[in-house]
Image (cartoon, rainbow, N blue to C red; front, side, top):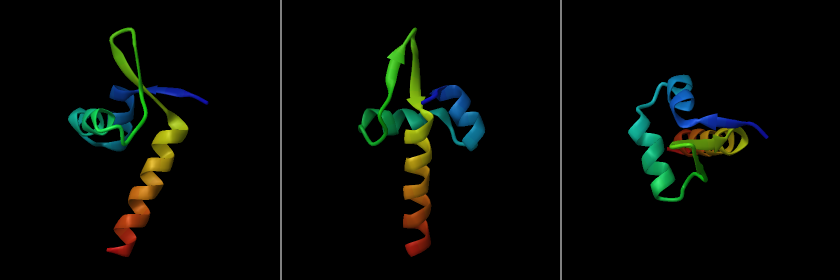
Length: 59
């Protein structure tokens, strides 16, 4: 499992940093704070994105 810095994830996904920080705050996305940065497991991020895509398709 790879850890991804929240800033790298934001640039990769083209979303503002506050969006991922809000998900971390609401516990929708698990994260770890290490060396003054938030880190997310890449697998958790991919799973959350797939869940979002499925919910958007059903709308």
